Amino acid sequence: MKHRLIKQTICTLLTGIVLFSCNRSVVFTSSSMEPGIRAGDKVFVIKEEQYTYGDVIAFEIWRKENIISYNLPAGKKEYRTYRVVGLPGDTVEIKDHFCIINGQPPQTRFIKDTIDGVGYPVSVQEEVSATGLRTMLYIEKPESILNKKKSISDNREFIMLDNLEPVTVPENHYFVLGDNRTASVDSRIIGAVPFEMIKGKVVKRK
Image (cartoon, rainbow, N blue to C red):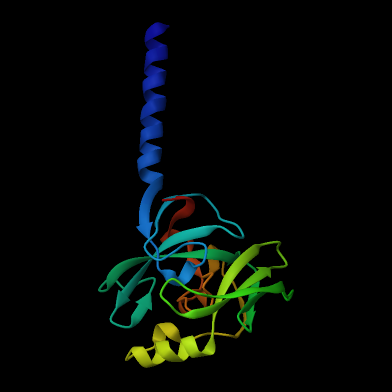
């Protein structure tokens, strides 16, 4: 009996260690999730079987020069961290930076003007979606966007998708957006995220 108890305890501990090491990791985020997550923050993520509205997920993409894809083996692997706004089967539309889910517009409220982490003027807006998701957003000022476009030779990542026609999220995919809504290479550009590319959900931040 005693030996069986010891064996069960060891097995439980080993299982916990394996799950911890497999499910948790650390990734670096960009400024596209400001104001909630700042550029350079370290985040811990845990792999789950499914995700829901408001989850901030970290996932893999591949980059080769100015091409970004979920499947580009010749490229360099990067991690992105964005917020889930659309689940499989949802219809997502963007109008004037704000997210419309299944034809239902959000409630929005201006909070204040401020400066983001890299020195650009932004307005802070609150968005409450039809799903109940409440998010604080950065929306950059027109002069900020213009300066960015002038400062880089290829502005693909700064094509500000103020509007997006309705799209349906495929099965086993998630539609994600950055909280820094006008400076985010998210599902508006690279499409919905396949489940198998997701590293996990952010559960803690350093």
